[in-house]
Image (cartoon, rainbow over all chains, first blue to last red; front, side, top):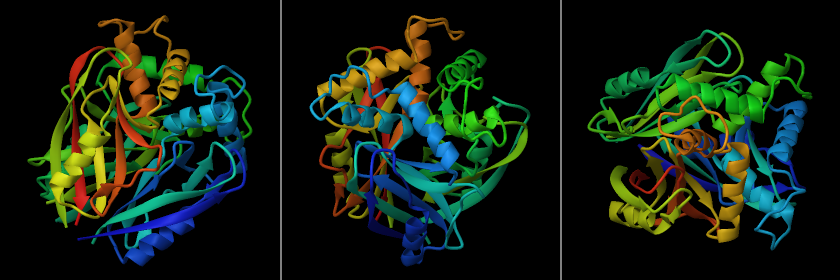
Length: 137
Length: 137
Length: 137
């Protein structure tokens, strides 16, 4: 049994940027030399999300529209120090979650045919970080 | 320390089928021979969810009604290749999550009195799979 | 490699109490003597949530307002045995999630500058429990 940990940088370009981090996480699993176990991807930010979803622009648009409807930017928020985009980013992050886990088998992430890992920028263009932890043998 | 992994098949009958997978996950923990640690249940699908909830039909009805209200099937979606049920299934999956973790103590899942594990079909009748990973000693 | 597990009691005072459990989880990590790995915090309740968020009262207010808007207490629910606060607590718990994971490096939780761990009471004043599991070496 072993544990491996690595920080991966994610550069986002704007609000609602969906950055596909699947390859970066798969590379971390390969670096770990762990063949069977489970990988965890944890964002260290309150205004971003990490999800599993299809690599399809139409579903990303639908997710953005859903977030806008559920937590509209144009509304009143108490956390207004950095504007409504920031306030709503905090809330959307709690609805979507900021971490995922993915099983590892024979050194590969076990993902369904249409599953990819996305880091979603919910605030503004930033240098972000996720921590990848792999546990197994 | 050891890691154990097993794929469990879940047959769903229709949209919004709540399949109680607690016993199947508990059996995987027993097969693993791991006494203390933590179990992870990961769906490999984008149009289903895995949650912890009470085994009570009224709360399942309320969750379905809430999902319908937050992500209505009768609305406009960009991801319309497979119809609105499919599009909304993707979105509901991101709101509920597609994996859970459960601590393991003395070979048993550590769940509250009213907690059970459910696989929720968000699309249509399908043969589904979850990967159970147990880490511990 | 080792695994460590500990139950932490959380006393909540009322609906929507946000209890900062970061220090309690950090202490469990120290007790574990595990230096590098990952910690899991799992609530054993269906009517509470565990989230990562900023320790800022304004954002907590906004999250409460968002929950009230998405899952209003003043509406009709099937699960009405214990009243609408209870019914909505179940639903809000599934939207927010009842567990989080946090990487551990050099014996410290790896959290962003503004990230803290909160147990959120979604029902009423209670003695609650979370299980902290630390895996690593």
